[in-house]
Length: 277
Ligand code: NDP
Image 1 (cartoon, rainbow, N blue to C red):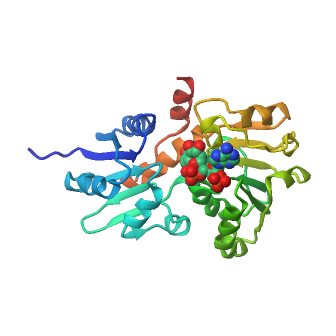
Image 2: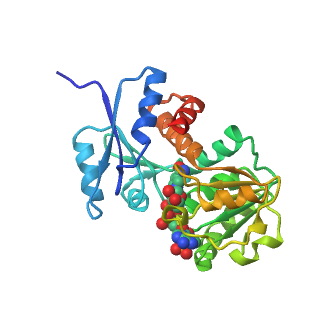
Image 3: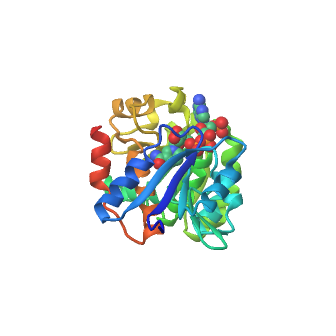
């Protein structure tokens, strides 16, 4: 008998914590699709083999998470513009003779900020902390929204410089002032939106940022989700609005769902349901 059900997976290492199977199951239920979506643990040196096994098993697509987004970019034979610019892939489509790589993280973050948190980026001043895959994956989507200023900062400032050099041409085309600053110099400026894209919260490490960087009226966003971080506590104590990254997670999944199924699922109820659990 032919298996008509479409199969998907999220691949990472570790992967047991992933909420993606739950999120895609909720989207499938809402839209009436009968799909199968599982979490796959790939050995660190076996990402390529893991993907080829899924292709052999006739999977339709896969999400990719830490630490394989760069490898997924290398493996893809065709790239969406967001994937090409960030050089990282979190969503794969397996077609007959090609592997298409997308990056939905930036779209996910921007939708969470603008649609769920009512924080529009046009003409705003943004501070982005971090220069790893997550930071690099979202910059282009933020530039597209034409903030007046996007300032990059990171513990290792050289990495912010590299990203600035790479993104400068795009910043100019969107008329955005793209800066790099050392973390210690941030308090002297006002930012409307301050985004923590570091993994410091994962290990409960402090960012060593002066709390004066947070202001009443600004939004402090932490891409981390699942627990209240010291970054969020600090921001709230200074009067900033705060949000974790759960909405971004659900919105980037919704964009992947749209790429695969051409149906836009509802996200708000999924975010609320995950938050209540
Ligand atoms: P990477 O490992 O690629 O980058 C880690 C970044 O964190 C680097 O900029 C690093 O700085 C910085 N960092 C790590 N430890 C510290 C510390 N103690 N103090 C200051 N800076 C530190 O990770 P990713 O960019 O892929 O992920 C970052 C975070 O974003 C993770 O928490 C991840 O879970 C989250 N994320 C959330 C998503 C969502 O949908 N909500 C999607 C994607 C990511 P340095 O360069 O100096 O080492």
